[in-house]
Image (cartoon, rainbow over all chains, first blue to last red; front, side, top):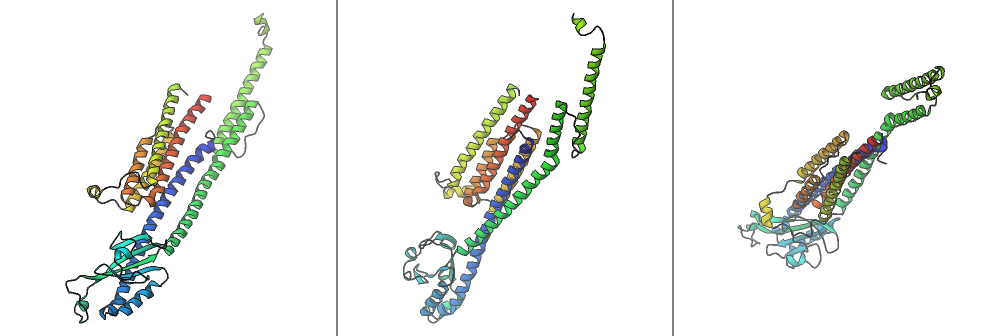
Length: 270
Length: 140
């Protein structure tokens, strides 16, 4: 396999191109995955901010029923795994999931790896969740409201914990991965196939014809130079034919001379 | 082929196979996220400083793979049997460690592995090819 010209020319090119394309694709995919996850976290932060703003009035009015409704409604949305409001004492004050309310956050929340900021984990139902916790700031309107007991020095009233399913993100990543795979395969087939086809047309076939032509010359067959052979290979074939004919003529001449000259050959031996 | 040349090529091939085996062994540890080893302590991390970004590591790996492939192809063209399997195993291990310490090894493992497989496959082919050229010259 390693001895043929085609293997020597095509195998290193195929290995080098395939390897490099695979390296670039894996790195590109990892980079795009990171960008998409970062984008999803940014979107989630924006959603959390919207939730806090929309719940602001009900919190100001201490409308617990209204706030519970807001949390339950947002939590029932497609792709939303959980919405929780954790109070400053560390207990779940409101949750879109039944049975979590009033529990200490350590018992209610499975993953506490990142108390603030983004986290990616598998929840109790086995779904992958992209969650963030955003602090609910204590605003002037909160600390000065007649109904409230929050001190002005208290910076945060609690934390909004919101988790979204990663299914759409995973789906998009899978589509992107498959498209990249198809694209890479097409590039590899085109590049390696193109190189192999060009080499076959311009190098391998003419060299094969030249080899057969030289074999024929050695065997003493009367051969015409293959008409496909042009350029250097054509000149080489012409030179080979010329050398072969001159050698043939020289041999014939030597034979004639040895037959014509008296006192040579058998006489000499005798 | 001269006996000295044959011995040299044989030794180069053995070194190459040892280098590839070393890389495969390290890859087995890397695919398990270096689980047999204890995690780096916080003090150790603080001493090492902030890890480079994913983009920087990816760019470094692309530049390294590209230059290594071009270098091997150039040696293949000149018919040289020289190779540096242990150096490549070292560079690739460094990439595994950088990705591991940055916490992004699972996403990037296959890129480093593909780089290693490509480099070792090309180097093995290069040595084999040099061996084949010598055989051909001897046949003529």
